[in-house]
Image (cartoon, rainbow, N blue to C red; front, side, top):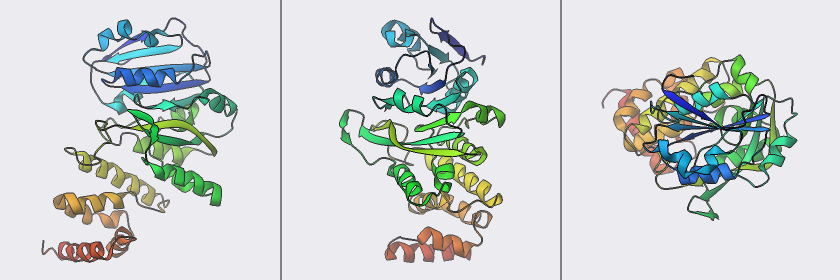
Length: 324
């Protein structure tokens, strides 16, 4: 066990559960309880809650009886290392054949157990599911958060293309992953503030021999104004951290001749609009993830407005010729 963590285990420890659900948590215990209540109490399901050094975590067991339910392990960390660190601790404690991940402010659909148990005998290494998106304070009201994921699944059913699911489905929720795959390739989360799950998901998709896609909603994703993904790439250093992760992702795929689409292009547009210094830095690295700078500029400008294309092309030309 990590020296910076304290483990408090439920009164009915599991030996060989079918599923392990890992939930990182930080200072939102009421929402965590909503998440836990969406997971049935079953000897088939090991629940691991890893608290990332919440100031009042020592009072949780007294205030929230749900944390003392059977088959749940509550782990308190004193490091405050972020969600990636908390998830890695959860991986060290997981015993299930299948791994699932949830964010503490989200929850599962009512028939989640029927859905996961009906897929427990799958030969796939990863199973991908659909999700719903709602507002956290009003779960009846839908949102359009991460609509691209359902598009990937719909496209898979239309044309059988696995590539986007394997390499562009960055979040870990909405998936069932074989623990043997994680252990075989020692796949872990990056311990960074943003996009800690991007490389984890990329390596899962890269190493999985077989995947399966289930056209059912398993997970309910929520939106709230103070979440880590709210006001995307507007917080200090967020754009820099996310851009570096996705640049390295694209570089990995490019080096392995598997890069059909670059996730970095959306961050280059954000940099162009928000941080020109950062844009210049990555502009001179485009040859590392594209066949040429010209192909990169075409890709980044694709489906953009004429006004954007003109401004972007002129600015890029000035940077290219080092006049800026």
